[in-house]
Length: 203
Image 1 (cartoon, one colour):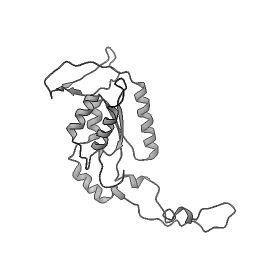
Image 2: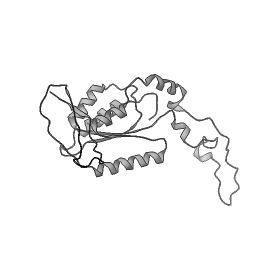
Image 3: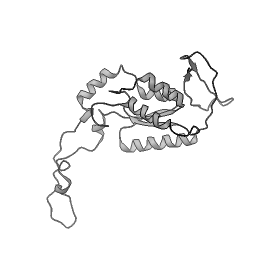
Image 4: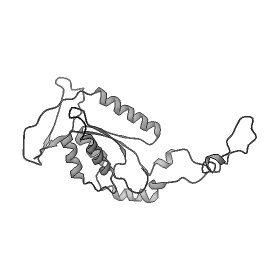
C-alpha cells in the first residue's frame, strides 16, 4: 500500500460485501495483508464487526510495518535509479562500463520517520488484526520480507484445508448481548481447539 492512508476497514467492508453475494453454503474467509491500525476509513468499526458476524466470516490477517519495510530490502544504488535502457549491465564478452554502485539513501516513503512518530500516537487506536482474528476464530501472522509473506500465505492455506467445522444455531437473546463460546475435546487436553471468542445476539 502506498500513500499516507491505510483504509483497512473500508477494504474489509468491501470484501464482506463481495462475499455476501456468494452461495450460502460456501465458507467465507477474508485474507488481509495490511497494517494493524486504520488511518482514514469512512467505514465504522461497529458496522464492520456486525457485518462479519452476520456473514459468519473468518479473518486471517498478515501484518507488516511500513516503517521497517525499507530496512529489510537490498540497498539501492545509483544504477538502480537509472531508466532500464540506460543501465550498464555486465555482459560476458562485451566491453561496457561497470555499473554505478554508489549507494543512495533509503526511500522511507510512507514508512518514514514522520510515519514512525505517527505510529507512536496511533498506539491508542485498536489493533484491528488482533480484534478481527480473535473474534472470528482466524489468525494473525507478521512478516517483513517477501519469503516470509509467502510462507505465511502457505501456512494459512494449509490451516484452512485441515480444519473441521463445528457449528450450532444459538438461541435468541437480548439484542447486543455478548455470549462467550468455549470448545474443548473430551479426554484430549493436549489438543487445541480454535474458535471465536463468542457472538453478539442480533435483532
